[in-house]
Length: 245
Image (cartoon, rainbow, N blue to C red):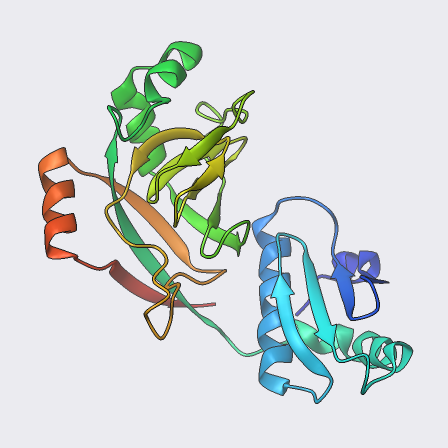
């Protein structure tokens, strides 16, 4: 059931004339993000006629509607009326994924600098990065980009002062308390510490992005030989389990 304090702080504001956004308290929190994910899941299942798309983020949920067929104020009233029940949903299955990563060298261009700045060895940084299980807070920025958190505070690090024009697909980086995976080559300023051979975004698949918001990811360090073997054999992701929450 939704937390009473959070419910009282929830607000609905317009985003242009085609969407309403439900805002929870503005902070990165697994508890708040879970409420957002539950609300998105429930409204998708209910599939009201006015709904075009439900887009969850860290602490908000955008609900797009067809403004040519439905009155925005009426849609808002429906959302407000249902809000108290939006997070009272059935248990949702969440998958646990293991992502192999080759750290450092040409795959992790910022690992050396991070090691110096944090006064930790590269192995210590890798150990800290791989020992935690991360929640997928949201997908965005580019198709399939996973925002994961929270990294150990000892390796948290700000974005680069000057972003790179092109970060290779599969790159694993750190930005603040978050870690993430670039699914395709793109500009970016995250501190790159490694690269996975897993294809995180495949538009030719029926399900282009296998990871969903609310899932969990744990990284596993691999050597370059294993990285190349994954690439040659085009091995897919490894699902370690399914949780019901």
